[in-house]
Length: 232
Image 1 (cartoon, one colour):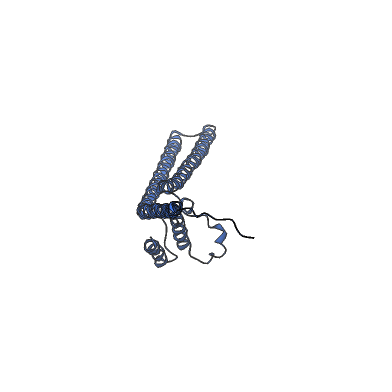
Image 2 (cartoon, helix red, strand yellow):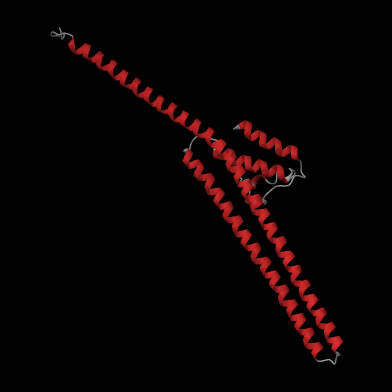
């Protein structure tokens, strides 16, 4: 486990401060290390992120006080919370984008309507009307094509974020599974060792009791010693 975690930290340090991460800091699996931020303020962000993730993973399997199922439950709980946060942020981003596009459409539609209304009040020739409405239609097409391009780009970005998040969680789950297998082995070995120690202690106690019983039995089998009256 130590080798694996050291490799993770070494990789982060070699990548340097310009390295980018797949997911936002909010979704990183990490322990609560806010108290150390002042001490770590000069460390590159990506290195701090990897160190925090290392601390989180290490904290899950640092001792044998929890059963393997409890350790997995803790990890799954954190992952689920991060997934819920990610999904909420994705939903919020989509809602905000939709509101922005709706506002743009409303403003554009109102602007065209105002221009049509103003134009209708003016005297114009057939050619002028044709030119006005052709330009009007051209602007309308350009606007909606531009909105579609923005929407397509937004959806592409959202798909990338989703893929990056899923890849990140999958990677961390694989990393955890490896640590969990090692933890389970150590937990079972420790459980067996504790049971063996308890068994040995019970056998020792039983043997001591048997030895004591034998000693008393030998005393009981001896002929009683009759004590005569003591002289004055």
